[in-house]
Length: 595
Image (tube, rainbow, N blue to C red):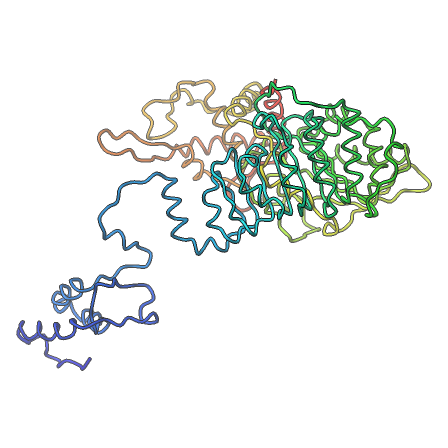
């Protein structure tokens, strides 16, 4: 644009309008490098848009003339805005329909998605690169468009209702299946045998509603048909940690000795190199004579055996027949022993290490079986009901760091396993255990753990808070302010709490649980958490934070009795003593709920 004379503002208004009209009536050419933060609608036209914008920045007087020309003929919107806002409003849609529209709109992004959790099969065809599918609950719909699917997590009842997925079963490498027999037809798991005749499975994990379901004939037949393949490597038999509806039907089953013999014969005839049992499954096995099974047919030199005890306690450990475990070690030539457990008693890690060492010693003395490696891992806690599903273990190894600094997560789910090389002494019966590099031990447990989260024991939040509040009240160590019977917990409340004698203990229990499930929590987060909507009459409700003074007093009271401690990153975090107390109360609450 040619420069205007210095006194162009003194031109008559008609002349200025003619100049601006000449600048603005032609088409616009807006390059990306010119203005990366704006875009224009297709209905606009302006040839010298940038020159006009620069001209409008000279003074307010000329900008008053340029405004109608710019915004009458061109719409400039930010890229973070949606141009559809300029259109007529649409009818409201349900959240599911909105999600479905978003999936359709950003389908190109989902071409890169390889893992999907869903409760409807209708959206599966939108993910052409899907490799791992986790079907939540009783999923609706069906899909036969999953050509690259390699791992499937699903309940048996849902799988039997999805012919499309059954057709893709032969291409799977990993199957994690929940066998809840109340949701399965009378034919049981038998229809699945047809679809897994020529399968490519290398890993099979089955979860049962009851440990006794391992004795069902349909279960044993399905396991035998799957593990007979030449490429199968890992098999896991587990008990689901959540309760299921009782099944009144009488399923054909075998006695415990007969079922044990059928199961072990099937596993011995397979080339597996990793076997995982829940302690509840192992209790059901009865091996009358190991010589009946002969030598193991697997070409593998040794097997990794994983024992899973979700709530490590002496009563569950004593239920285990030690001779059964020793005979399994002998039959399968076990060379590596992994023990995954949960903490419900004081110093359970030391108890677990002591129990594992004694077990290895007794097995060696009983039948001479020797193992090369031992791995212990506290995988979860009965009070750990966090919704985090990702396996966020840090690959970094800091051997010189303390445990508190080493793991930023309070949840034991994110703690590294401890692996040891076992050396049998020739002069004494006591084993010498030397710690080995953690990278040498392959962790085969978490691939199954991170599926349906059946390993995780959840305690209802309200039940746990009530139980822990009663514990704090009986203990009598928690310092309670004198104004608890008259103070309001938030500016948005009209009255103080009605339970004047117990509400402070319940708030303390709730705060302790909230901190337990996170890394660290400050007073500001608690204020937002315990705040609520304020009734403002005819005006819309508005969120009001809770009293910061009360939450600060609660944190100070919990800190004085050793439940929480100050975090170096700010706020408070759960202490070791506090985590132990919460684990114990949660275990007691869980047992009461089951009774």
